[in-house]
Length: 603
Image (cartoon, rainbow, N blue to C red; front, top):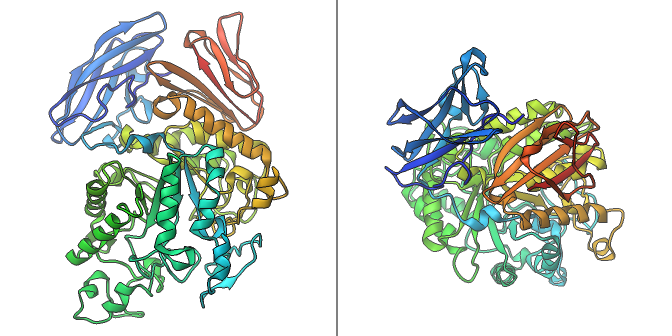
């Protein structure tokens, strides 16, 4: 509760993107008794240096210390040492994981980085993921010839969740269908549309691209994407595409030409002496792996990245599929080079373009390289939230592991969030794509197994630092036991009627209200993160800017309730039914009701 605190937000670091050589005064907040001394440890050119921190301000409830960090390197790491009898052994380190009374490695130090953090709009966005085959089908789709690989399905049929037909079940959703339903996105309050791949392939997911030179005719072709992007921008929204820099499909025109050993494209792939004669992504022969050692591939891929950001398409950035494997094969490790190059290409065409990586595990080392602006934040958000809220749902695995989702206590959940969050600069934290699920995971409603916890999960999504991302249908209670099974079609008739068996109006109202709350309060987009209560069944944290302090409380079950210092401020309820009261002893009483979610402004 209310431990010493520092993060990269404006209350603690006045210069979010310093220049090399700049001196940045960083601030430390210490509630309760003042330490006898505070020291700043900075790593400069690989060598740790220690400097005193000065007491800058003091009240009966807390003390502020300031110390200068010289930005010696493009990524400069630092942490604080607090000295006093209130700490175990007389001293404790404060780093991104919290207060630790033992020696710690540098991996979780705070970081200042000279790399620009990416566009402001990306930090402030609410992103809506659409899987084009399943979102909406325009009338024009009826006139298109069914491809030879497709297994036709009727709109509303249950998706195949495994085995034959998983990747070929075809509903015929298209880009014009998405454009026809942009009112739904605006009514919900989202600001950015993210499309999974639009290039032609031989699957419903299109991650097996047959070319990067055109948009799939089954989706309406180039004109349909240009029209959709224009319509999105006309509403003041953004649109982000999806690109595979790690592999192509086996039917790709580059791969066809690569069969000629003398061709330029032959250098684009990894070849082997064993069947099938080339490296496939994770052994899949349908997805030949790209070799980024080839200079010609660099130029070709740069051209693809740039083309769809420019007219007539005007995408606002890219999400990169399996970015963690791009450029990595055996002794080759070119991921950082690829990410920086793609980012430079984006910025040369669209200076405010965004670049997001898919990464299912520890992305820390890849997010300090100056390439990706952020990742799909499975490690620091999705999996911890799952492990705290998931019910006993048989047959559902914990991500890639062959085990069920574990049931963890609040302290373990927060520790995981802090461990993974500490590995990246704050500027990245604020642009991480937080999500409760995607087209690659079970649906959150299925995972929870209890509708009463859906609001708790959604509340965390829209109040935790980072960019919230929801998969189309989650706002209406879509279900699915794995990624493929969860790629359900949108039940438009029920949506327009205000509800039905496949569309929960109450869930839609919750999502809409939480998105509006995030849009109305700068602290939820830019504020720091300070944990104040961590119980087995309840979590509470503060989001703070210079002008606003919000208290967020999430409970997965009834709990004993808690108390916070009344000095935090006078509470005003912003979301949730419960009011905070002040006890006779002068503390803020946090109610123990649950499952439940609440947000209060502390004035």
